[in-house]
Image 1 (cartoon, helix red, strand yellow):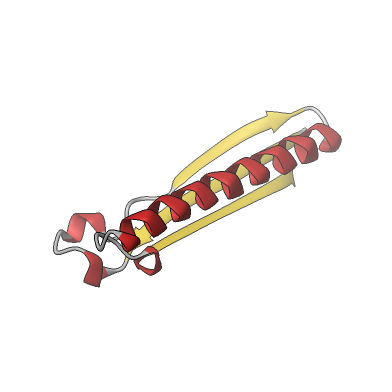
Image 2 (tube, one colour; image 1 turned 90 degrees about the horizontal axis):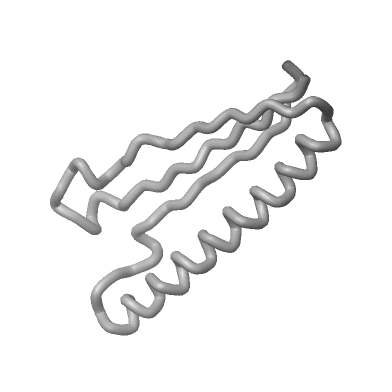
Length: 87
């Protein structure tokens, strides 16, 4: 049995907002069991591609806001980790 674990988190630079609750949202951690390593690695690959695409879209949207003078993408930190581990 294999377990796919992924963590997704983001944080906002304190200079970007006065609301301290917005600075460091709690990371999301998800676990999914797979019957073999191959299936786990396949899911990992798809998930990593999806998370990268989502991050790229978020950064693109923030770039649009930066051009409008409303935000700076450097103020947002996006992080994720995806691992397949034997159970």
